[in-house]
Image (cartoon, rainbow, N blue to C red; front, top):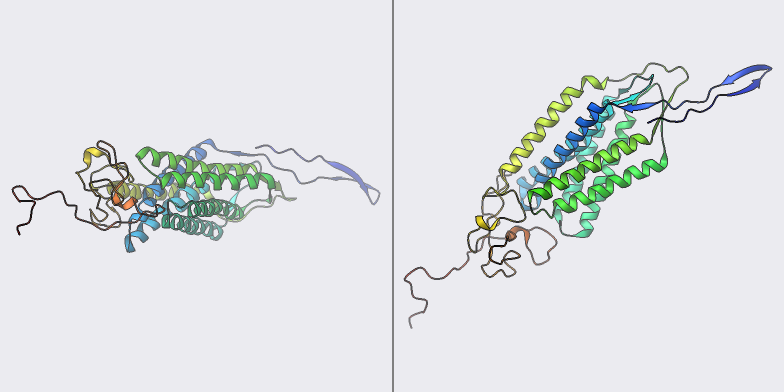
Length: 351
């Protein structure tokens, strides 16, 4: 981004001609390689976070905590913070050396993970409730923005960093709106395509907020352009990338390995070809260790206790996703389904 240079002005001071140079907005640019890597981190991190997050409502106790932690680390540490860090490494300002404060950088990481955990916990309580979903989206979006500007505060330059207020507001609105859309899709997941779509939208929220906020950034070189202190981030780039992609790969492998007992990707619907008559096959908690069939129980008549859309040949919701209030996923107890008397046994009682 190129900023307009302030003009030089001349004046008189104590009888001498003095040239007064106002602060100059330095030209800044982005390295394309780091942009591509940062977008990849955002997409993979969002996918890992969402395939973990949709298991939170189906888990209980320690398993629920583990899934929440996995989703928060994937979203806050992978999709948000790592994307931001790699994107900032590719940020170049002409004539200035950029370095970073490690303590503030660490604070931005913890902030991203903590806010992500809070947002996911809120929406997981009642995924079908619009109020909780909106609150979670706002919290997640504001968390993305808070992490970004905390990370920017960690940047040391030989000058002053200022922001254009209007673009800052726009960047926050982008983060909140896209986070809302992603969570809405994720917790109404029907197929793998929905998860991928939600991941791309969440990645757009993170990247859109980051690069819009960078467009709001103006760096003014100081009078002496003195040397900066702090850590050179380029030396940390390979370490961050390896750790981030490795952790995300483990989370994705664990999540996809325990999607459903039948091997179907969909958490909310299972293919009718894998369904046994009258029995809902429940999701298996891969990381949490929830036993298969924990959330079983579908009546054969397609009533309230069963899944939606119980017509022949149509996919039906597992019992874990159905409850009378319709505003949250609640594991249903296993209920034996009567399917008629055994072969050869009379259906009438003897007097």
